[in-house]
Length: 158
Length: 151
Image 1 (cartoon, rainbow over the protein chains, first blue to last red):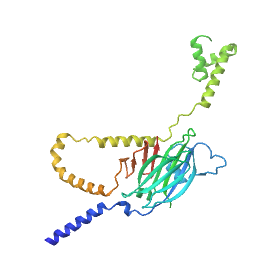
Image 2: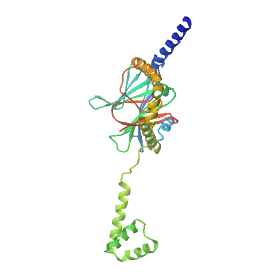
Image 3: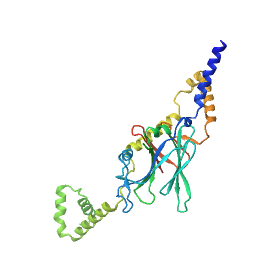
Image 4: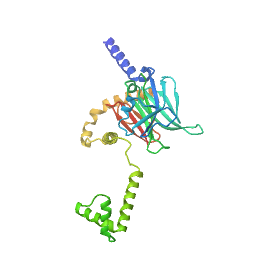
C-alpha cells in the first residue's frame, strides 16, 4: 500500500515537472530569414538593383493590393535561445529573443538620422509556428511615399 | 441656355446622363450658343482633370483582412461577456470550484517559472502582442501568415 502511494506521488511529481518545464528549453535554435520589402504599384527605383519578393512571399501578401514587392534587404538570422540578436535593416532594427515559453519575441525599432533607436512594436510569435513555415509580418504605410507600404517579413529559412 | 434647368441639362449632357431625345436637342442647340459651348468645354476639362488627379481612395487590404478583424473582435467580446444565467452559475459554482482551484494552482506554479510580462492575447495559436504602438492583426491559419499592421 505504501509502495502504491509512493508510485502515485512519483507520477504526480513527473506530471508537474513536465508542466513546469519551459517550452523554450525544448525548442532548438531556429534559422530565420528577415526581409524588408517595399510594397508599391510602381517600379523598383533605378540604380538600386532591388529584387522582387519571391513567389512564396508574394503569395503570403496576396491579401494586400500592391502590385510589386521589392526586397530592400534580406538577411539570415539564427535564433540563439540564450542571447538577444539585434539585426539592422534599412532605417530600422529588429531584435529577436527566444522566450522560456516557446515563443520568439520580436522588437521592431525605427532608427532616426541621429542613429537613435525608438521602439515601434513588440510582439511574440510561436516558435513552432515559424518552424512549420508560418510567416510573421510587421507592416505599415510608408511615411515618405504616399500610397506605398513597408513589410518586415520573418520566416523560417530552409 | 441661361436658366438653371438648361445649365443642369448641360451638366447632365457632359456626364452622359441625358435621355436620347434631350441629348439630341442639346447637341442641336450647341452650335448656335457660344456660352453653352464654352460651359460644356469647361465641364469636360474639369471632369478630365478630376479623373487624372483625384487620389484613388483604395483600401490597403482585402476584405478578408477586415472580416478577420471583425470576427476577432466578436470572439473577444463573447469571451468577455459570459452568457450563462446567474442563477445557474450560483447553483453550479461548487461543482467547478474544486477543479478551478486545482487549475489555478498549476497556473500559479507555471507562472512562477515564466518571466513576467504585460501580455495581451492577440488571438489564435499562441500569437501574442505586447503593449506599445497600436496595430491591427490579421491571421490566416490556412495561408500560414500573421500580419501586424502598424497604425
